Image (tube, rainbow, N blue to C red; front, side, top):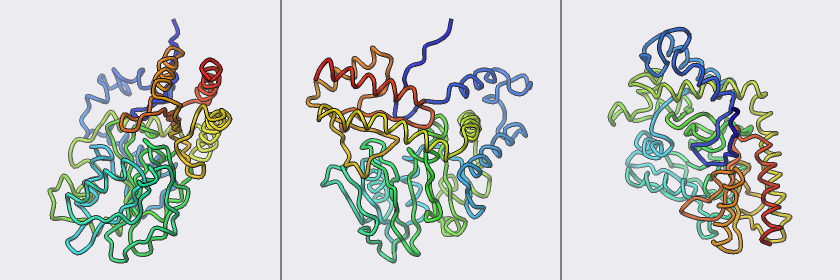
Length: 363
């Protein structure tokens, strides 16, 4: 009997391509005729090392990443990077400069303050995160250790399309919820990081892309397991990596390549987001977008309704119609549809139809 797939709009862990799940299912018990699962194999084995290398190579290829960047595969999620970044690069005489545009950028800033000095060089908190600062309005202290920003705000639903000029100060981006979803000019960034559980694979592995010249500046006065230099020197095999998560990420990257790469994924993602935003904008205020139009994310689409009671009814009815993950983050409420790479266009079309029908019933 065939399984009916849920329309999965969860924000992370998020939807994975069905064909990837099917392949992983086929290979779970025995991998490449080895008599065991890859989850059981030594991370020092040639079989896993090949998976490890191919994952990095695919990521380089899809992102067109120059050889001047190192690719690190780490654990701990993006939240661990909130701490590792300042631990590796803050010094007593240099502060980290943070652009605050949502909950996760604020968490990164607060974490840095536990390590050393951090300053907010721009913030839209007073605007309730409904907009983003203009790049030219972000004034960077010339002696800053780095500038940190979040390219896509998962909770609030906003997304940068242009980035500040930071001169000699390294620009660092938390790209957890939009890496591989669109063509981002990566050259302004000295470092980027992303938890995999949005567009890259399952939870458990975090990608760090780091320029060689910035890596040279990383601290060696912290425990070895916390140093970027340790992971770079050992090809991210200093300790046991999240083997199965890396294997799954390789499958997702292979799938992304078969789809036509980042350009094709971006085109599809824009169309998916357009279908939902059209319903919001055409609802006469029944659905109210959270983010000002120029700053809207195509990954995380957020909206409110006239009352929390109506929003709760929307979520309950959506679940009865085969949808999951449409409740907003617990810290802000409202509604959110996370339309990551693996969410098919058909799911977004179905959501748009459901939203129109819900308005007809309750408007």
